Image (cartoon, rainbow, N blue to C red):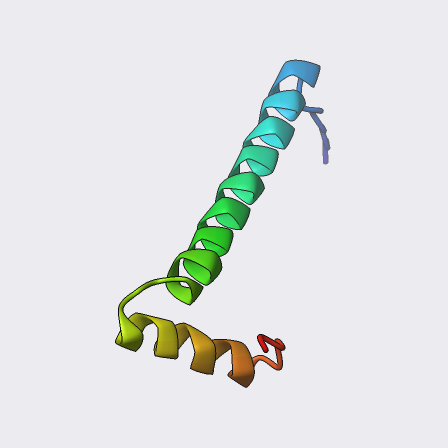
Length: 62
């Protein structure tokens, strides 16, 4: 039985890392927008939904 292993080229590993970092930053930006955008929204229903969600996660907001 012959086993062979191939390592990813350095360039592919870097692309994978940069993709993961970009994805994480995008998720962080979307989450921050949802919390701050909904939290400071003028629409009462949108603000109340964000307020209740923060309380359900134990996040102090006032």
